Image 1 (cartoon, rainbow, N blue to C red):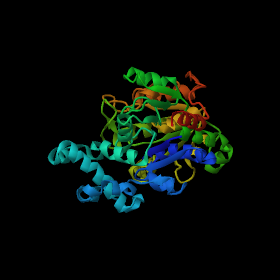
Image 2 (spheres, one colour):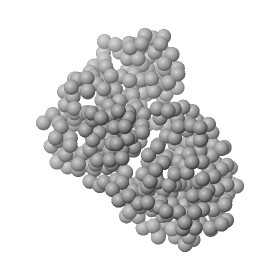
Image 3 (cartoon, rainbow, N blue to C red):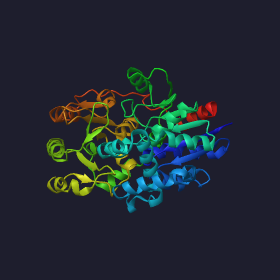
Image 4 (cartoon, helix red, strand yellow):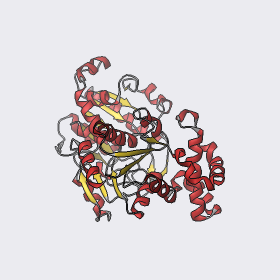
Length: 412
């Protein structure tokens, strides 16, 4: 049997990989390494030994002949990219940036490479040659990634060019940037594979296995004693709406990031809708901020609308979703976790002239609103029991980890 290389960044991406590796280590019948990128390294190292978990700087000897230039370019970008609070070592940040920038310079020349970096920042990186050296050194026969750009995307391209098998595990839907590069794509359901085929990915092998991290979260949600949480929060017996926030970013037509317009437009509208719903239907309204957001960005609205509960410090995510009847969210993983936990999920678009970042949540079973007026109307109809809500039983298959491991064994 060959050797597997898992490649993933931090956050939800490394969580997907870690859930697979945890189960693989029970039998220990597959040889593997995790190349855990940026914040993903400490997360994996907290679960597994450094026998299995590697960071980019562990491979710096492979690039010894160019190390001076790599260090130079890394140092050039270090100040704007390094933070002591990230938990990533300065050396690993320098090597990560240096390798990426060095390859960009090799590909385009220094002047154009620096210009590309100035415009796109780290999104300009695609270190294919760098990853090829690692794949050849480790004698890898299968690469497994999620859906991140840069090193994850480069790993798939490098593996494809070397004739190495690839698996890509999609964290959400088929409308994503960059598009999958793998020969074998694991996704939640048939609607996602159909979306990718419509975007031209007709040669890939599709496996409708679900998504490990979401499945784990859903199982946790379903096990929560929601009545205990309800009592802890002091909720009344009417329905509970949870608003899971996220930065109101604007996206390009290819779903890449465009800009951040600020909070005023969305929050002024959303909180006024909450005031209307609270006064008319006496519902419970909870707000959970995204981990990448700051309470200070919302403070003036919390001060003005004191009937709304900020619950980040009172409940974890699973408890928050367990206690709610309705989730309101623009478009994120939380929407999928909620719909898979049999919650009614309202999604909405607020920049009507811009690209919506997750088109899949514009159709059933999600209740989508094209703007604030329609959102207010749909929520009103819902609380008056006049809105038809469709449920889909097969949205998220379970046993995803077991099925992915079986696929890995078949391909490695």
